[in-house]
Length: 467
RNA sequence: GCUCCCUUCGUCUAGUGGCCCAGGACACCGCCCUCUCAAGGCGGGAACACGAGUUCGAGUCUCGUAGGGAGCGCCA
Image (tube, rainbow, N blue to C red; front, side, top):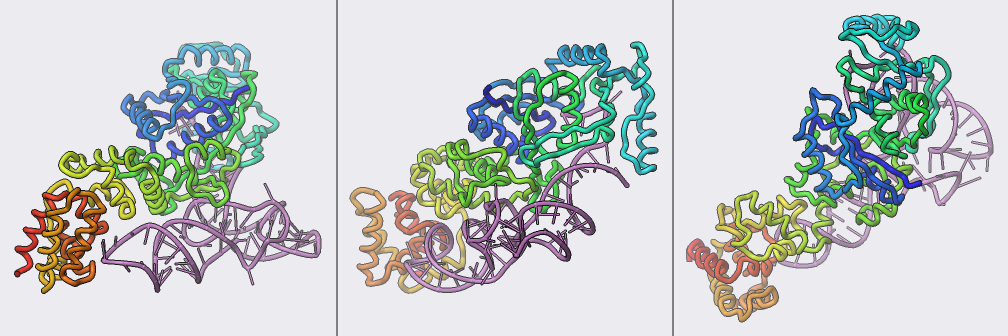
């Protein structure tokens, strides 16, 4: 039997880090075991579900490259199915109609809280066997076993046992006719033949009652794996109010999807001392049973480090289009400068994100917008600057073919001509070309500027030397 | 209040009774390299929450304590 996993977000917002990791683990588990990965949209909360959120979630998964094999399925399209299953349950005596108002239920809970007992439904209809009647408050409740216990083996948390006495008769169909989460998931997971339920550990508490519903439906129980949460950098729970952002924000912030995936796969899971995983390695090595039990914090610095590792090791030609995208975000035209793959090579040791890389490349795609006064004072207003720049201009003007090696030789020759070390030429030249005293190696900086731009900027800089 | 879950360097983690006076990675500090900044190389400080017990031997097993988290909805 092939295994099947599913990712089942509710479309009430964007795909955030926690959801992305859940999706990744579901996807990896399916790929690793040669199974199938299905996407299901849990949109029974009509108040909060939106089409934009569905699009945002799918966009996020596409960006990360987490392709599903089936779906997306929409719960709102399966209403008839849920109603039929609920009716069958009522007919079989495994569920019943109840008619309490929300106010009555609130009062019941408040009273139980006061008495220090677990809050649970203790209404009158469980044993009432009342015939169906029309009432705006009519719901269907599941008749949970009153005695015994539910035991399951979570692939991550281990053995978990729950007393049925702790569980109450949950509503499975609301007064508006819509199914509730705990009911719809079970019906869906059965119908979609899900063999492994991988989800956040905020659902462990729901699992025993869901298992009871599986039993009532005479379906076989899938395996469960409850993932620990991802906390914010401060150890607080991530929420929309507190630090949770869309995975697409990471694209905008200059991260590579593979880097995010690699970061996420290592957050709560590991394989010895290995830090870098190709997609193939993730698939080969990942096993949901190896996931850690405890929550972990999101660390932007480690993500940034990983991102740079990929910036350094990925094919520059593959990164180039992404850099171009970020250049355009800055209002720069990639056509007005050197080949972006060359820029990637020059800057990948100096930038952790594509946003940083794009910012640092602006000097090759447009005019110098800001002069660092300290740099000018230190490297242009010195006795040797004018001679160094003049010599550089002279040699660079006649470089036969404008490539990195020839540019390097020309600058070396200029230094030799004035009898100074490289630094005496490189620094003034760097300030002339960038307006600052920080840039990639001088030959790279000059090469990427191109001959015309380089000579122009040296001429401009000469006027600043005071010579 | 009740139920369930979790606890190794600041952070992510290795560790499944002796290989651990605890290893790797990020971050931090120092040195080297060097045309700047990085990157890289080398080195450094830094943790088994606490207490009992089991055992010849415990980070690893058991119990308790403390701390943290989740759930207790006609939300998912």
